[in-house]
Length: 224
Image (cartoon, rainbow, N blue to C red):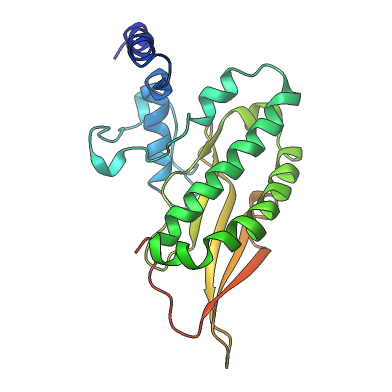
């Protein structure tokens, strides 16, 4: 859909709903969204090998397929970043965006049953740590990288660890991986171990964010 038609649609919806609904996603470039979906579908992989992000070199996925639809309820980061010209605003805005995504995608990953049991602890103890880490991460990123970050929107289900990943949209390389692991120490119950990995140490180190106790019984699968 041409950009001018999408803009007219946005204005029309805003008028009809008296400004209470503004579908900003219609202003999001379809090509850019295609790249984001392509990267999100490859959990934790380094996409830089053998991959160019030029439009004419990628076989883009079918955007009408439910499997490839972006499940984020927020305006994409690329759209927010393009509206910010001052780096002093860019970095803290990205931190707020990342923490908000970690909150929503973390609860989404838990599924209803786990979220009812540990959701409040996650918000109270893990998210503040994520905010601190995000502040440190932005200090390691130059402005161009920060503007081109792509945030994944598909947490891993089952027993997978992924909550969300950050990628450099220019190369497809991972920047940051936010995970949760199920630990079961001998003679103890189950714990949810929240941690992250980052590109600056080649994802070799396991950086702890905190643990939340579950129960002596095996927890259900994520997103169950």
